[in-house]
Amino acid sequence: MVLFLLTGCDGNGYLDKAMELRQKLMQSGCSFDAEITADYGDVQHQFSLHCQADQHGNLNFSVLEPESIADITGIISASEGKLTFDDKAVAFSLMAEGQLSPVSGPWVMVKALQGGYLSSCCPEDDLYHLSIDDSYEAQSMGLEVWFNEDRQITYAEIYWKGRMLLSMGIENFVYV
Image 1 (spheres, one colour):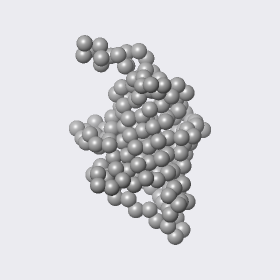
Image 2 (cartoon, one colour):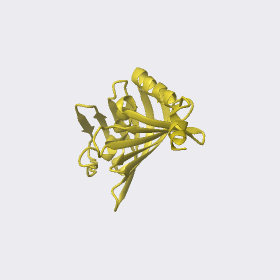
Image 3 (cartoon, rainbow, N blue to C red):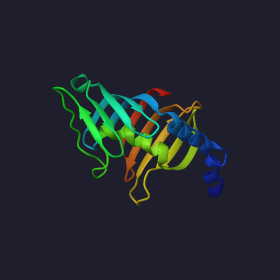
Image 4 (cartoon, one colour):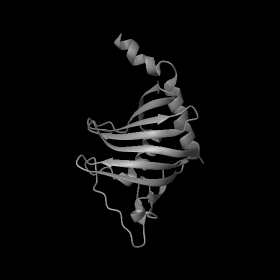
């Protein structure tokens, strides 16, 4: 019975759909809006970003909401990060033992989709639920992603040591 349950998801070609999503991201990149909730346990921060990622995983973002930090822009890549702002600043405490900031969540999502270990993919309602392990360490960062038949991402969650740190509602997702 356990073997049946474990193979029921990936034994039907669902992981192939996740591989197709990965291939599209690595060929063309994507653009999307992310409604992010960062959960620090005792407090939550919510904000919106417009993001554009290239096929190499570099991500440009601009803050859309809240109004108090709107228009802050940034670039995140594997080798650097840069924020640009006039008279506004954004300051979030780091998460996951310094490996994650709330504004870097979309970049982590894209990088994990492009290169993380795709551990399972199952249908869930009208979507596909993909689980990704982005590290080979015992306390790795995990990513849960939901996408539709057209390989458009609709929602994602980032976990650290079994606790959800970030959730991201994804809208206006397109391959560019």
